[in-house]
Image (cartoon, rainbow, N blue to C red; front, side, top):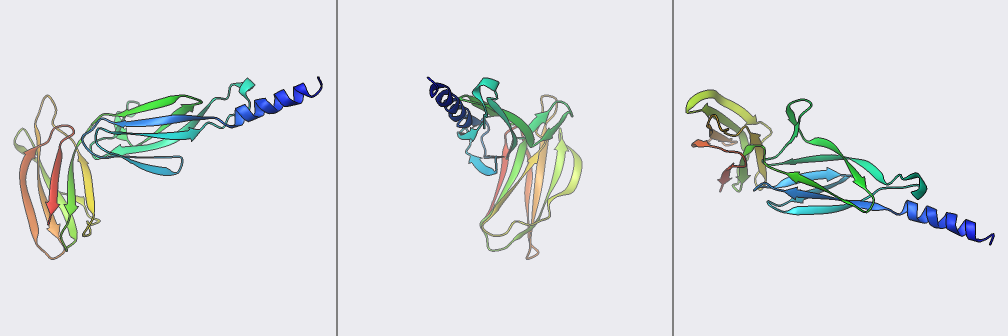
Length: 200
């Protein structure tokens, strides 16, 4: 009988050390979503989901250490986390992963956005917008992209959408490195709307 106790203790250690849970990120927007957790990055297609298995690193089953906190970076073309404590938006939060369980994170749209896909041979130098509220100009020639958009790449920028009380519309100007520019007339953008600019 002396050998029974060491075997039981060893079995407890094994069951305690090898444990994991899952994080499932569900993209409820019509556009791309991105998240990073535990050093790995993932892309979630529109209306899709991605599930990631994560270690819980329990030490001892008898001490009930069956959960682990992870830092989660998450944002999308039309999504940011709303932080009630600061009444603002952020792309960082912390999630608790429990052994044997799946934590669901739902990303519902919070913004509109403009997206530039540069398929031409010239780099985009700048993108600017004019913003209108109920048809009245509020902001003029606001630069939102100064780092450039090289050929063969894309870029996006989240925008404040219309609300129940007012229509928000945006007009855009795309300036190219060769000195030319393209102007796009104002369009009302609601939450989860994307103003797509494709340069060919």
